[in-house]
Amino acid sequence: MVTLHGFSSSNYYNVVKYVLQYKEVPHEEHLVYGGTEEWLSISPVGKVPALTTESGNHLSETVVICDYLEEVYLDKPLYPFGAEARAHVRQIMKVMELYLELPSRRLIPYAFSGMPAPDAVLADVKHVASRGIEAMKQLTGFTPHIAGDQFTLADVYVHYCNAVVQGIGSKIMDWDILAEIPGMREWNRNMRESDIARAIEADRIANEPEFHAYITQYMARSSVSDK
Image 1 (tube, rainbow, N blue to C red):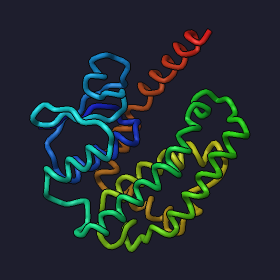
Image 2: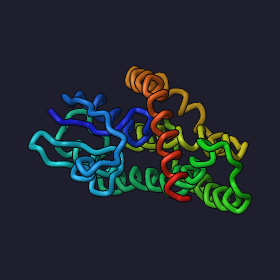
Image 3: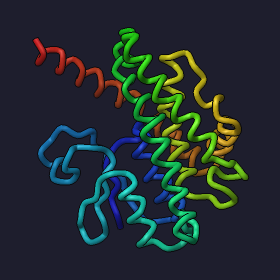
Image 4: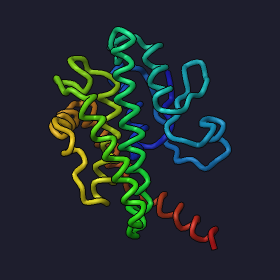
């Protein structure tokens, strides 16, 4: 049995969790927020999620973990056949990460602190996100899935990246980013309706109070250490 380390309020944790459930891989979850030497021995740069394999080795980085699961657990593949088709899936994921999710992630400190984001930061995030929107218009098909007629890792990855784009980026900037990409909002709603997504969302909601308490304590410690 493999072990998934992290917490349910993390969108990247939920990407891996979805893949594990979709592929019906026996697994257990280990709740951890980071910050200990033990955690760094599992995830070298302290990032969530991490996975301990059946042989006891540790993996980190979401796509690395998902690719490992794809190679080891062959049932219900999440990549299409053919090098170009697989590259297309990976391209969608990379564009989403670099140009939409990560820029939105820059605004998380302002979302949690309640402080207004500086105009320069907002302008830079909007500039990068605008490039991502135009790229996603070209790359996505929603016919019916994001990369074509097959359900792929891009569907899972983009759906959970959208949680940050919509919940942080759009909220802070008062800009409905998903609506700028034709078909994205309807597809995202459909993704939320799967049994797996519903179960993961229930776990996320259950984890929210503890996660927010952790963040509050972390920010308080950071404020004291900065003085």
